Length: 285
Image 1 (cartoon, rainbow, N blue to C red):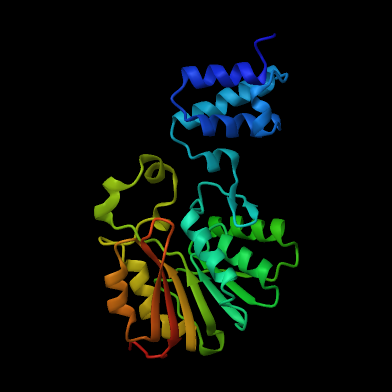
Image 2 (cartoon, rainbow, N blue to C red; image 1 turned 180 degrees about the vertical axis):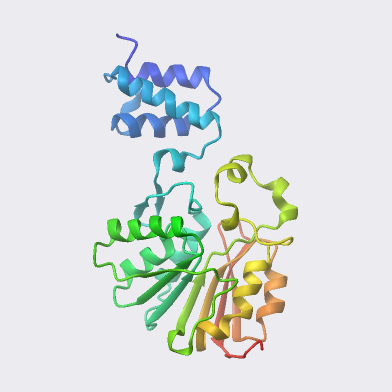
């Protein structure tokens, strides 16, 4: 029985598996409840916990993302519940949201539409930071919306106030009384031709429609820009995460629709966040 201590199991897994050390520590800490710094000590470990750890490590060997195994992903100040029906929130999206909040961009805004809300990370954070903001979040997946509603309830509370709707934005048409003064989206932007560059675990486990958008990755971005007149108020604001190679294409589509456009860079110094100010309200009919 002396074998079943946290330090022994941790050392054995590090020697015998190809799983990276950080993920091993995450799993052990999650199963046992011990803090990361405690994993080096000979804390007692039950056989049940040991078997759970081995099971979850086997999932990691199958390339199942850690977030899906633990069913949570940290984002901004919160832990969001995630499963295979939603894209795992990325650091770049967290940066975009943090920049929006730190810059006070939405301070005087009254309504926001989050297109392709996934687990609800953008909508929930914005509603928690701006309780008076009218937030609507749409997604084409009913399963994703169930996850988003759960996160809103769990993080904000029963009276979270977010309006969730099942909408396929490729087909959606909003009436004029549903116009928003801000639209925010992290759309799918990976092109089919880029599939070979995507990590196998991402292609295997994360939702396809949340990742890929046409041959060059511009299908959803183009749909959003073409349908803005149906959803965004005159002089409204569009904030959108884009692929690191898409600045020129987005500029070509958006420059005539806004009074001013701006791109902000991510941690890797790529132009990843599009800001369109002063929507001109032109119809594409």
